[in-house]
Image (cartoon, rainbow, N blue to C red; front, top):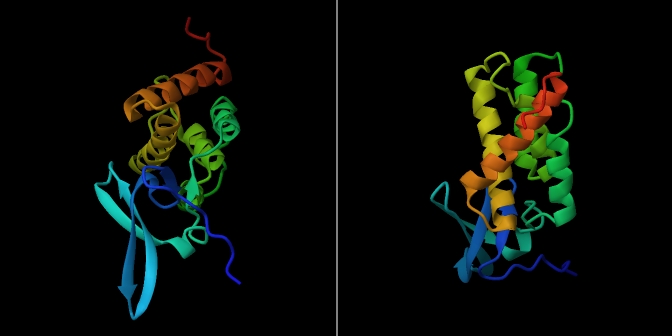
Length: 177
C-alpha cells in the first residue's frame, strides 16, 4: 500500500532542500514511459527555474511546507548564539556547511549563517566563505520572507541586524543602541 503523499495546493509556498523556497504553480498529469504521473510544478523566482516533482516522490526528496513559527523562532534564536568555528580544514568545513544548507532544515541553515557571519570589525572572509555565507543567508531570508510576507531584502536586513547584535555581545563590544 502506498503511504499518503504530502499534499500541496496550487499557490502554496514549499521548501525544496536543494533549491530553497518555491511556489506550487500547477498540478500536472503527464505520461512518461507509458505511466501516468501526477506532478507538482514548482517555480523558484530567484533562480528563474521551474521544477517538476512527482507527487509520490515529494516526501522522499525532502519537499516540505514552510517551517512552523516555532522552528522559525528557534532558527532566529540560533543566530543569537555564539559562533562555532571548528578547527578542521576549510574543505571539510565547507562540505559540512553545504550539506546543512542543502538539508533544507531551517535551524541548520541558521547555524551556517551564524558561524560564517563576520562583523565589520572582524577579519575578512575568504571568497568561498563569503559565497557559502551568502547562499545560506539567502536561503534563510527567502523562507523568513515567505513566512512573514515581506520581501527577501527586508528579511535579510532582519537577519543581519540579529547577527550584528549577537556579534557585539560575543565580541565583548557595546551593543549598538
